[in-house]
Amino acid sequence: MRICFRLIDNKSAFLNPQSAILVLVLVLALLFPAATFAQAPDLSGTWANTIITPLERPKSLGERAFFTDAEAKDFESVDGTYARWKASRDPDTDAIISTEIIGPYTDTGFRKVGTDRRASLLVDPPDGRLPARSPEAQRRAAQLSLGRRYQPPDNPEDLLPSERCLTWGAGPPIMPLPNNSNIQIVQTKTFVAIFHESMHETRIVPLDGRPHLPRSIRLWLGDPRGHWEGNTLVVDTTNLTDKTTIEGAGADAHVIERFTRVNPNELRYEVTVEDAAFAHPWTAAWTMTRMTEPLFEYACHEGNYSMATTLKGARELDRK
Amino acid sequence: MRRIIPLLGFVAALSVPAVAHHAFGGEFDPNRPVLLKGKVTKIEWVNPHAWIHVEVPKAEATTACQFTPNAKCEEWMIEGGTPNTLLRRGITKESLKTGTELVIDGYQARDHSVLRANGRNVTFPDGKKLFLGSSGTGAPLDGADPTEAGRGRGRGGQ
Image (cartoon, rainbow over all chains, first blue to last red; front, top):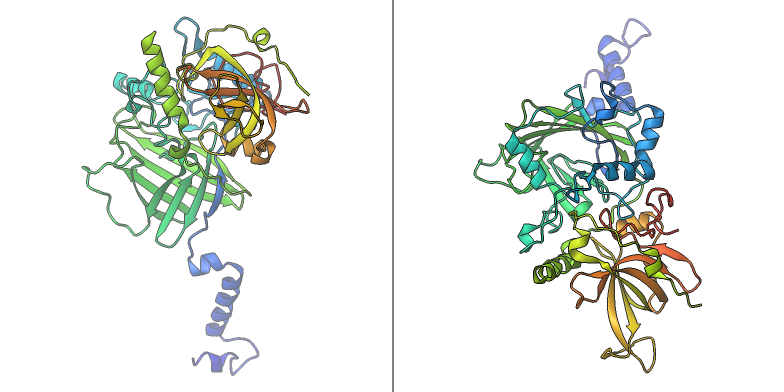
């Protein structure tokens, strides 16, 4: 407290060094409260994860990493979306190869590529394509894909987790969906909750440095652990199951996500996936945009009449 | 004003792609188009699909109609899109008030004993049309979908 009584140097009209530092600190604290008081950045809010950019760069682009303006507009358009879907169909097998779901049920016509027009969500490898995958991984990816060939289900368990209202989109990673592709982040000092509109799933990320669960415990959305690196929330996830897959990865996949609010309206999302299924890890990155509206409830199980109708339909096909 | 939609004239008997999420052809019968004229009894604004309940007067039905006196009705459920997306496209619960007479075309459940249909178009008494957007890929390409390539843009049903 002696500083208070010695703000003015006895010998001159200027502040003495100690009080000058105090004044400087007070000025900085007023101008830059976050940096001065070391608060975590605020990721709270609802974020639209509706980017239409595909995970992998379309082959037609060859070595080019970015769409031209015309290519971007065509990719975003309803016509372009339908053209891609139709081109992916195999008329002989009558099975849909593309996993892209389109049409008025979805946000078709409303989604955009990124402002930089990168033609893939993948940023590493630099060719914008997934690393080589084992045949087993490719099979796994195909079996759990929405683009797989329809087989009449005997039981609900024969349908995909999304059709059973179990999980779709919460991740990790939080891949953009054709519809309901929005998240809400709720943040405290000790936890961050990442809530997904699709099937109202929440990942609760502890920030207290506790270790991961034992390997024997597996969770639908994995086991996340978070910490701050500067302005970036880093979420490390393990303990996944074989009921879902990340592009063919197995249950021992290791996922590292990075969330950075680069400006008030943009959340930069970066995800790295490591798994024995891939020749080497890969990284994808894109931007989510702030929503001004709240999310709408998605009580999937309660409204899933389609499950019963689909099972009855399968029994009808059996009778034929 | 009654509108008779020559549905069969519009529908081309196209082969339906077998696709998951949740396969259209597994749940509904693309060779069983239906045209239902009835009054809305209930709207279920739920996920993953909104459902419109309509009572359709039928002589052989067993239940008394709620909105048509001295008549018997079948109770049908029509599948629409996810409310979240419908809402963002400007279609709300209020767009489909109970008691409103609608003409709905769609495709019936594959099990024909089930009075459910995948809704395509809804036509209001004033002639306004709404596309229910209940399907993603897999539904028959019968021209009803205004967002289908070459036929319209973006919005479902306006």
